[in-house]
Length: 368
Ligand SMILES: *Cc1c(COP(=O)(O)O)cnc(C)c1O
Image (tube, rainbow, N blue to C red; front, side, top):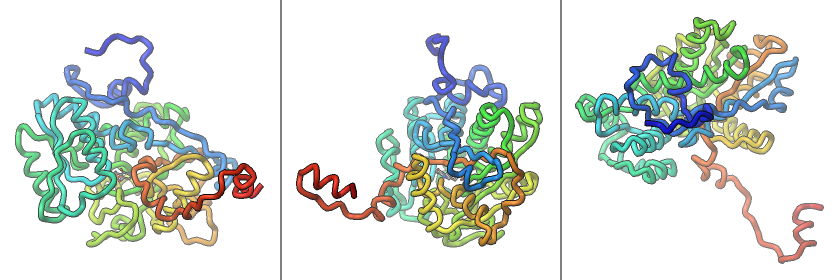
């Protein structure tokens, strides 16, 4: 039982306690939470200036979740349900944020976590969290599809719970981000921009906005604008991409699990899907960190790069600047923290050459 702390903040309670009325759960389900959700919705004065005409741009900073990505919103629900069913181990095929989140929530629940991976893909810096949280990492001689097939087969066993994005509890938990946006803004924004990989998150936001609209918590639903990496853009091209290529590992996906629901969300919201190049993502990542103090991983910068593209009259964009009404609010979700992938920034950094230990020398180095 939780100790009764009457002043527990929304953050400390986590998304299940905060939004229980919208999640259709049994009263007896144990709640496995690390205080996810209730992330900042930061106003961006500089992006607002770029969009202009009285529009206000807000950043939903999902890198501030417990394992530093939005995956925690779905994982709290997936692991809580797994424990309720009596599963003793959660399993996933992931080299990235899903494994980090699964491992943390399994640790919190006191059950095991297994991460099944193709051999050779294990060096990724992102695995550091799964290792620290005590997950068992299993390398197989096969590719990612083999890993996913094995995970699906294991998920059929009673003691195993699969927590890859095909688990519908993940999407249900991720809806809470849309609820938070409406609760904070007082209504839904005119447009919601986000990165699109397996397409679970865009589907979850749309479901969240739609449920809140039905409950009359907001007067409208936003246009959903999804952005894919140019080299990994199956939804944009309308076909499976056999060998997806992008620096943004979180969206290096050629055949999204939630493809159909994402297409429905894009259509029903009068939204659009567009592509941004790796270079545009990396520039937007640097811009957001240096101009607004918000450091995100490359995949998370896709909606920022996408907003730049929309506002650049010289670019052919699937969504046009004149489709955004004057004086409206736009929200960009940034999905994961920049420290997830530090190498990408350090690769481009200039070498730092030492100078004499002298204040005048330091002032000179600072160009004063
Ligand atoms: C998982 C992930 C994505 C992709 O989200 P989907 O729901 O698969 O579209 C994007 N960015 C980050 C940081 C992620 O961890």
